[in-house]
Length: 398
Image 1 (cartoon, rainbow, N blue to C red):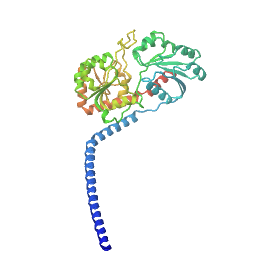
Image 2 (image 1 turned 180 degrees about the vertical axis):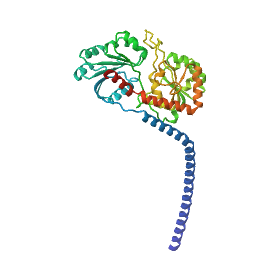
Image 3 (image 1 turned 90 degrees about the vertical axis):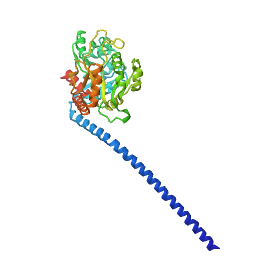
Image 4 (image 1 turned 135 degrees about the horizontal axis):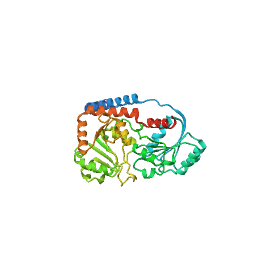
């Protein structure tokens, strides 16, 4: 009887082992099947993604090579600069960062203060070689007068000329030296009694604006970043149907005032303010970036009753080029002083020409990249905040 029970247990155990073995082999086959399917899916993804990944990596490598060759050393001057920021927050805070970081690379000591602080008291205590104000629309000029009365040199860099000249005209004469980003304002400030006035445009800050590996969902053929001033609205209304048929992204405020907004609404990120790194990624992710200057005679937004025109390219001109993408810009008369049209940037004059140039450069990829690379090199070689502030210090101190 005991032998019979042992035999039954042995049979049951063998059967269980056999069933378990069958289940194990079946599970293994399932895992192998799933693994094989995953491998096949991975290989398909690799084959699909490898060419574009290789192309993007090669392009970024070229850009970094160009940037390194464009960089140059600057002398560090034994100066103490007290820098007074705009104090306005975004979108001016990136300018404050660009100036303060660049100054630290150019002079021995930098003290940074905000407009709400007692700048005059600090200046009289520290006695810096220069007190530099950026924008200065919100700063009390009685403090500037006090600083100057003690023999401390002051300078202001106006960042929004000629759009706010009704306001800056009341401030300029309080400073020893006036720098303006707009060439047409130099004679204007001199006519107000300012003896030392210099043209110094804004620039690109490479820590913010440089070629980037943009995510796939942020890539477009064409993009525009900026507010819908009325001259831009009128222009985009004329090309809305053509842009609606293309891979386009428009980002900024007020674009719902377009008459053709229903046609373009799917292409517009309405009301979005992007920080510099987001803007840089958007520029880098586009094959073509449109640049369109605002009008100096738009009374809706401007404080320019003197009717001063605009000739100098806007700051976006340098920022777009610094991202290594093709810039398609409307021309200002000073543009050729900074970039060679058709060589380092592309230009347009009419709505029809804009569309024609978009289609041309999308169909001629090698030429598009060549122009973009030349623009990147020119920017990093001549148009960064290090270059601008070095030029300012050279003007002031020789």
